[in-house]
Image: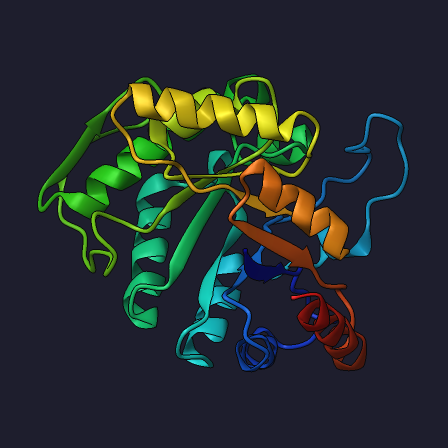
Length: 272
């Protein structure tokens, strides 16, 4: 089992560079950052209502946090967990991913998802009902930019003629696209444009991983790595995930100050 960490980095938490150094010193493989550009007022994002956690309102840009983390470390993988692709311009985002992969020497994990906060998505000009289709085209377009000298893409939601864009990612053909989510159609998305799967719920997980690997083999693909986001931090829970076919877990850290984060880091390292 491989062990990574995730944290909502904010203007009130431990600095991403300091955190990354501490994570690498303790032997963790990766550190990933969620994304929220903003939280709309007057719209509760939760079906049952309720207040929005402070960390959602104050989240740093994940690519800025990744850059700080990458420049402070030598081996640690850095990534998004997840990047809200339907809220982002694909040409700009392709540039950010490639730039961080270049500066880090090829250490980016590009976690992607469509997002659950529909008003947030709508504020970026994307119809929430179409966000999964938009995400697929934007990821396909980014792959074209990363892998082609003169890239072009013509779809329903993304359309551009031939362009030049450097740097290209260090990782070939591009950083792993890690598809987040556990919905009923997520395996289709992983197989369509993903390199890895990152579920966050363990219901029927063993069966779904078996299905994923069976379908991957039918398509002539190697086994697809599965990382689990936010497991219960106990040896039993991690062992059960490993038995189900998970190869990496991302343990959560609190969006707090240095002292609290370092305590959580030590607890996670003891579990590892």
